[in-house]
Image 1 (cartoon, rainbow, N blue to C red):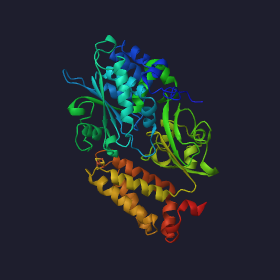
Image 2: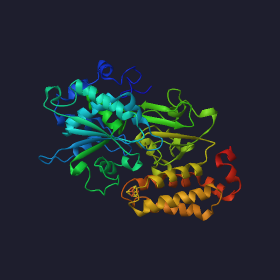
Image 3: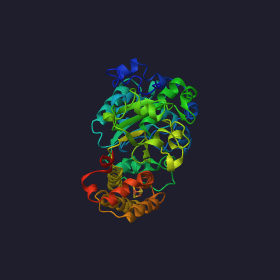
Image 4: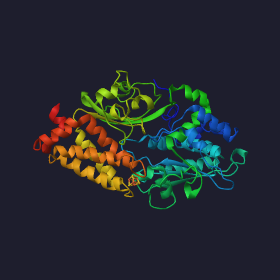
Length: 441
Ligand code: SF4
């Protein structure tokens, strides 16, 4: 059984309220942290090996150490709660059931970074969660954990919740900052990076909800103990939101030493494939990361078991591996059609492109059109090659990672499931009435 650090108290009734959270030991990590110096906290975070839980997996301690500290210029912590990646819903769970864990993490992080005004930017579709967060903020303030001179330390902190308008692109950190400033959420060119010029051109750290929540157990048990959980550079625990054709969709906390096979088939986690079907493929890190067929998902090309961690999932690179990403684990059974699935994703990325750069604005729409044509049985063999060519021209040629996010699913689908694309081309009539999965199993 995986060790639980974030969700250990999630089952306790009333844990979303201050009194219950406090009774379970809540805010003791904050009390401990406020007796430490900011540099000591930073060292603990670095020692923990925590990697950003939003998708990129960049070491959090290193990110914090890049924060510029010009004299007299305010700094900010912004929590990225714009959880819009299809298949990803673990931050929603944290905010809904454990809002004080996030606020305690923000208190420790803001103190470490020197932010007296911090923000939670939350996606518009999570319409009921800002009220939960605002209530928790008020409770924390009434108990002296927010506001002026917190616990007599002289440190002040205000936290504000800002609702987004529902654009996927606002999960990209610079688009988020634009939106938070009240502008259209267009990603900025980098450099300058937010650590130097972020919110209102002030040094800013943008971190995912889960990353900031993880700061609480790191201070609680120490960075060194946190680093002992997990394996290699995949330290600590990770939340995985599992969905698709499985028996037990939900949010699970894993310690990154379990195998993918165990995660899918064990009753502790996904409980196997629904209706006893066969596993066809999986996207383990949210819709942007490459899809992997079952054989390469359960084992690497070298025959080693594949583990639920950053290194093992990526083993083999994009040719045979994938990525941990945001931990949005989407499982597809044998009945699913990869062409249809890829087309749905292409439509999503086209719709969400902000339109600033040509390869993304034009390429995502073009890919969607071609995929639609192939799926309807109206495509030609050359269309598959054209699709491959377009995704190659998008990848790495755009301002922000949405371009890559749109290109990778198409590339992986063609690489691993070209036969399905060809089946649609060769069977125009059948593909109008059936999908590849249903026609083949
Ligand atoms: Fe906008 Fe797409 Fe360019 Fe990102 S890659 S800036 S979403 S057009």
